[in-house]
Amino acid sequence: MSCSRRTLLKNAVKGCVAASLPVSAFKFLSPAEARAAVGDPAVRWGFLVDTTKCVGCGMCVKACKKENEVPYDAAVTRTWVERYVITRDNKSHVDSPMGARDGFTDQKIDKLEIAPEDIAKAFFVPKLCNQCENPACVQVCPVGATYKTRDGVVLIDRKWCIGCGYCIMACPYGVRFFHPKYKVAEKCNFCYHRITKGMDSACVHACPFGARKIGDLKDENDPVTQVIMNERVAVLKDEYGTKPQVFYIGLDHNVR
Image 1 (cartoon, rainbow, N blue to C red):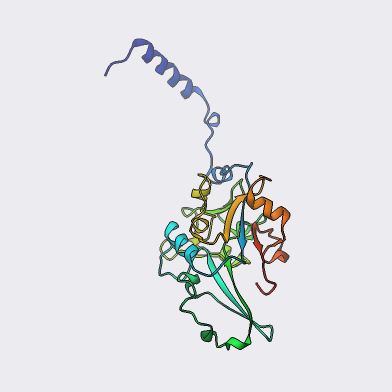
Image 2 (cartoon, rainbow, N blue to C red):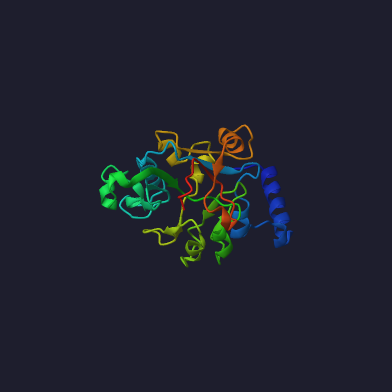
């Protein structure tokens, strides 16, 4: 391979200039700085769950496990669905077998030891990471493995997580767990690798009834934003001050 004399001279000059510059002239991002630069600040991802449309089929849980490499037979999952059975004595009975991975078709009410005539109402509630505006998990992580992107999604860097479990204990929503294979903290991340490419999260894509939706809360014309702005919605455990970004339509006061 040959090159011109001019090319050799240009490369030589570049090399001399680079060698003469101090190291401070080059910008090397630390892992923490690199994580802080993730995401588009013009976007704020938010989630909308319509409990009146959820039938507890479990399609969302199956899709999430497949998409995010959570073992199918593991009891843990990034998202799950809870069944609430409210009896006439105003008591709540809650179950979520295997996170509702297989739905509730084989889970008869009598397994909860409740007589049908004693049931006042029953419904399903999907749950997932709330991607809090003030995430407690980020605050307690001692190594910065849990961090919030500029578009509001809380992520976990598996390479930096030391498995201390502080974030799992700090989360008031119980959405975090230890990954059975990687032995690090794990949780829902809104399928960040999908939504940043213009796709829906796996659970939204899989839901056959439109009970789950994701959108940009900074875009006032986004359908999700429109619902949150103009309809009655609620969040889980508002009293903790974490400012959840998962909003619910038809959230029953018995849900905890």
